[in-house]
Every structure is written in C-alpha cells, then in structure tokens.
Image (cartoon, one colour):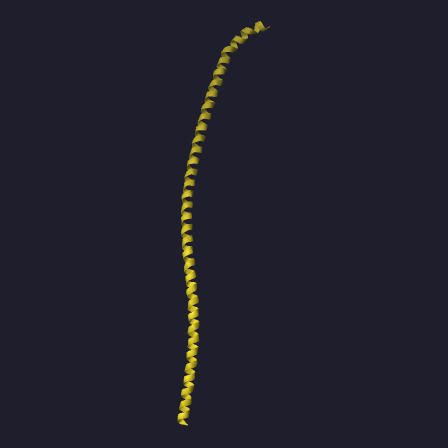
Length: 128
C-alpha cells in the first residue's frame, strides 16, 4: 500500500499541478486581454494628447494674435485720444480768437457809433 499511496499522492499532485497550470493559463489569458485593452486605451489617449497639443498650439497662436490686436487697438485709442485733445485745444484757441475779434469789432462799432452820435444831435432840429 505504500506504493499505492505514493502513486495516489503523485496522481493528486499531478492533477493539482494540472489545475494550477490551467488556472495560470486562464489568468495569463485574462492578463493578456487586459494588456491589449490597456494598450488600445494608451493609443487612444496618445491620439487625444496629440489632438490637444495641436488645439493648445492653435489657441496659443490665437491668443498671441489677440494680444497683437489688443496692442494695436490700444495704440489707435491713444492716437485718437491725442487727436481729439489736439482738435479740442485748437477749437478752444479758435473760439478764444474769434471772441477776441468779435470783442474788437464790437468796440470798433461802439467807437464808430460814438463818433456818429454827435451828428445825430445835429439832425434833431431837421427832424422836428
């Protein structure tokens, strides 16, 4: 019986090893499937990263362009503000000059009327 029991133990051990081998094979196949899925996801993620990098580059260029336009708009705004200030200053100067001329003309007219006023007294007897 010793040989039979040793044979039985060997048979059980071989059966156990066979079961372990099948289990390992199943686990290995499962791991290979998971690895294939992970590799596929990795490829998709890399594509997405590349697409995002392209998008980020485009957005960076757009931001740069917007900054250029913003600077140009700022310069135009500054130039227009200066021009408006200059026009207002010239208009104020012209208005002041026109007021001075008008004042001189009014004074000149007043003097002329003052010179004419004594002659009006001479016409008073004629009117009557």
